[in-house]
Length: 186
Image: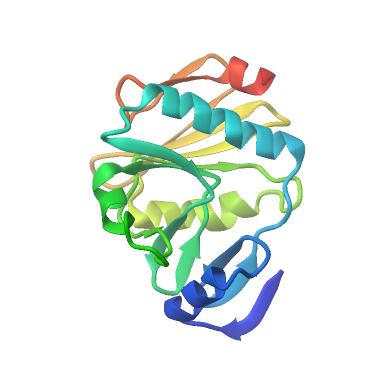
């Protein structure tokens, strides 16, 4: 659900921190509620966060669900999963009442295909992640059992690859691998 009134980032932060029900994003100044999620959606997110946390050095990175990234002050999105560098976490840690919004490029952002909004994430959110310069962007489709990766190239373009199973090594996080067959079996 979109709320027609335009708002600033400060208004958005106050709204979210006020305890408003739901998960909210800011799309070019317009408040948009993220739709409800299916079991497959929620389970895929939880499993992926667990697998990433088991492979990442917590002194360097954190794998989190439903945090926030900023393209501009008018656009704040909530990827389903993201990997956040320690330097970014230090900017918001120990600051009570501060909403964690990460403006810089991340090593990995993931959207899990939602039955409720179809290809909205690919058409709307993936281009924003590319504009931000995120290093690796994934879209996981739990029903088709596919994972599409967009990996940033040195010239700023993205190489797209579709995986239908097997083990995928993350380009932006050397040594981190995701077994898609296991992920989809969870």
